[in-house]
Image (cartoon, rainbow, N blue to C red; front, side, top):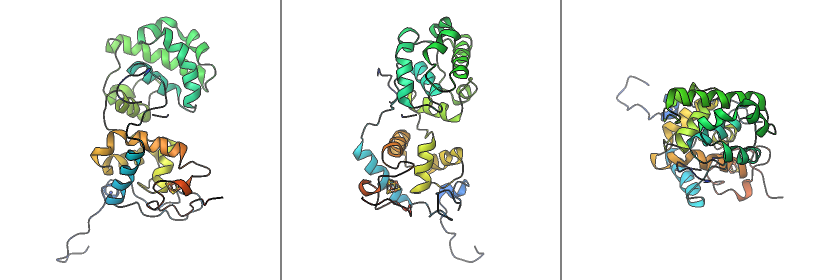
Length: 259
Ligand code: SF4
């Protein structure tokens, strides 16, 4: 998804006297590996050092001091539903579908009353709409019956909701409740492995690596900065390297050149 913030809107020796080398925290947690993660590169370059990492986020922050999600939502519940619907769908398509849906159902109780069939009607332009309609109703029922109609600010409680996985729970914890998690989607996975920030073979390992090394002052908004950067600058097919604000810091060996 593209990530608006907490406030609702319509808003990683020897046995000698030598000191042991300092091992990056990401490496200690097993996130840094030499793997052919970058297309056409046999061995990925080493991740940037701490100073470079801080400089990268400083520049991203300067360029966009208050990053916002691009999914429209009204409150934690509609954020949760929007993120569930955004799986394998664009934020734009989700926003088009949820505008009329949230206008009449912006709480778990209202969504439950609306019913699966009508929810399906609102979201049929989105991929996997049948499964997503079932999940929206099922999670709404759980929120009503087990959480007093509120979205729990708890990762374990979120992750057991139908259609909600690690990424969705991380986004909700970050955007709705201001918890400095760094949900990793396809864009952040690509950006992290290209620069590289953290080199790892799965989104979960990249997330763990990023959450271990991104300085605290940047952690809350890191998800937003990286996802927007990946979506509009460090794009999958042809990254905008000639105009990239961190091109001098990036170690990607196949930067594009100006036409
Ligand atoms: S220089 Fe190119 S590959 Fe490196 S971060 Fe920027 S856009 Fe991505």
